[in-house]
Image (cartoon, rainbow, N blue to C red; front, top):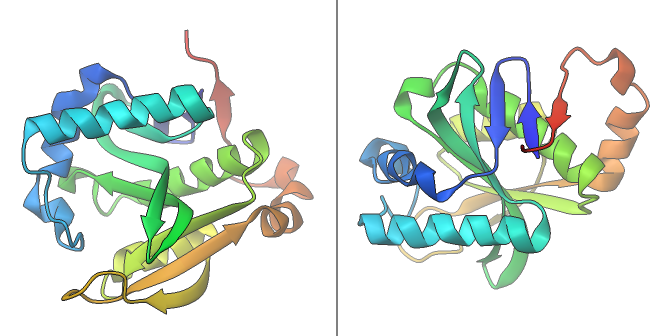
Length: 194
């Protein structure tokens, strides 16, 4: 399922996205707040991307490859849902990473809102989490603009700063969005992959 917003197109990733995936995830600048650091080599990138593809096949949702509508073949980032272990708990986590050339354009907020709409309205997800380091103020603002609510702060990894955990529930989404979506300014189109 493709997601089309005002400026972006989000589509399921495929193995041909490997070079773009590696370019973005191996960049030290995009990993400043990632305790694990950049992806070490292309083989790890390949395995991670294949896991994302498999998740789509098994669960019907996952991570998207993100491009601007103006340049649909130029991937500017990746974002979406992954199942992960965090501080001893299994969570559904929303995350994203954009190439530095895409920073400061509001793409993260726009993509996050689209992913939430898909997650709640099409996939009927019950609870979506997002984790972010306590000093990553830009991503905290993105989550707050998208409607996430702060839940708690967790020290999940030794020797790094703790992470804030934000949450967004299906119930909150229904209360805040479904009653007035026809007049909402932002528009999301869902299209099937050909």
